[in-house]
Length: 303
Image (cartoon, rainbow, N blue to C red; front, side):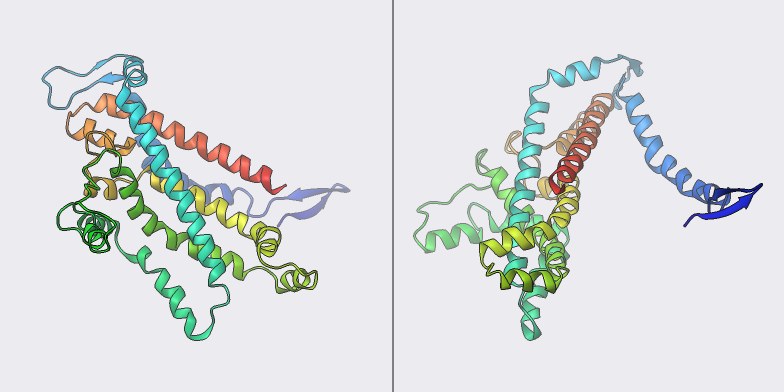
């Protein structure tokens, strides 16, 4: 809070803390520069080099050569498309399920709260455990999913879930959605619980119920949670590596190869660090641009 003081017959604003507030931020800024700033700058510089870790040829500057190669690389564009499908598809479905569950369990009190706690358990399972769990569930020969489908007569042969270029991505997304739904359920349940009872009672007196109550009364209060949760999960999915690599390693072919998997393959399989750094720079630009546009769009929708 700013204070005022009178000097020479005039009132002037006095900033609390004076110069000390600036010096107290120096350690935090220094840590951010070292932990975040240096790797970003180093990656940008590396992206302008032709640098293969196992090659005997010394690193040399190629200018924008890596970026030209990137924009002419069909695998990069496929990885970008896979990233968009995996990210936005998972977030949209998980957000819808989480919001629905939060509204369905809104009135659960007493012993029924146990159901709410149960719905949060998938979020507590480590990602790598989830990946291997779903990988074994969708195994073509011994997986429980095919066994159940064949037992119910819904399938007459073993379905190659993870070995099919068409089915692999939806299968991986199922595992991802299963882990993210509890997060959205938690933040939407908190948003619903924070709705003032006076607003709800007033709406009921105006005979608002069902879909009208949800769309006109509760949805506006849930919009802030959707903004924060959606942005966090988009960034998380954009950087998701463990689940995809443990389930398919980006295959079959490049069917489930996202940007993070492609960068890993180039950097630690081909050891082409310069080209992988160029992809990383473009990747960062995409994330920053999306975050800015997403926040602006949501702020405009709230006005």
